[in-house]
Length: 144
Image 1: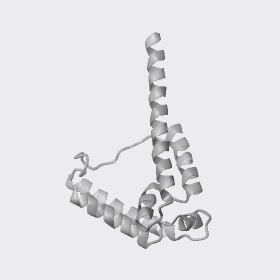
Image 2 (image 1 turned 30 degrees about the horizontal axis):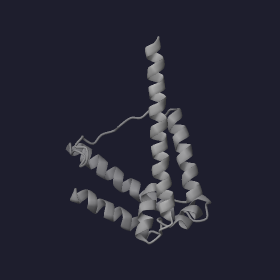
Image 3 (image 1 turned 180 degrees about the vertical axis):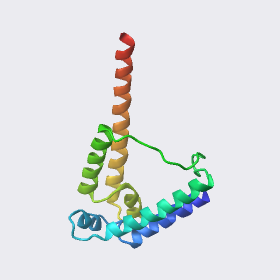
Image 4 (image 1 turned 90 degrees about the horizontal axis):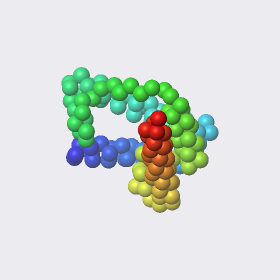
């Protein structure tokens, strides 16, 4: 757990240091006025990729789940496409993504709490919607 906390601190510090925790910087990226976020994402992807490859080759388990690292194949279906589009719309309108939203609190951006509350409410609403759909599907299947 201390390692996870340390990694989170490094992640938050990096976002704040690179100014990516500021919604106006993210919006400038999304409107192609400042492509700095591209370099931050590229750097993070390289580090994450190297860590995952290294840990998976050693047979190390993930710290929270204790499951081995490895590829988890997810099919590209309608839910991925629609969910990604909705996420992108929310990201573009708010100018913030979840990780940067939390880091934004660290730099004193208190109005971001509205966006974070919206993320939680949206995730909760999707969970309720999905459970109602699965309940309705189970009821139809058992009738036949």
